[in-house]
Image 1: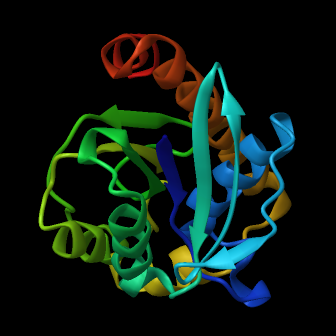
Image 2: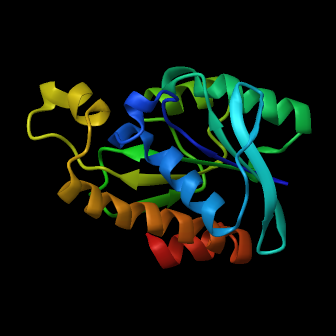
Length: 185
């Protein structure tokens, strides 16, 4: 089984913010493959299904971004998953809006959600898809930028990244991460 996790914040106040791109991708995948996100356990909302012949669990941690790793760790321990079967999807200020970056492993950078995941798993060796959100004009405005409501025109650009990330998940499950990286990076 593959664990596909989108990072975000649970309250509706955060639903249309740049920091919730991981949740948006999970919602997109769930809709496309008719996977109901209707179970709550492991400090997450999740659902299971089949994508390209592979059993998957789609999960959205409900711990708030900075504690996302706690939820992921509970799922990994319960199902005895290996890191190679974990895919984390999250927003990235260093990638342009509408673009994505796929990586096999790596550090968390400045992303607090990823810091929590790396710390909880005690490893940097798991797949990730970074969904580009760009950075604010003024660096001191970062919190408002990632947690503020996205205007319609900017959201249209971000939807391209959500779509690409959903397609990348399919490609990873069908042909592996190396082919997906060559196709989407």
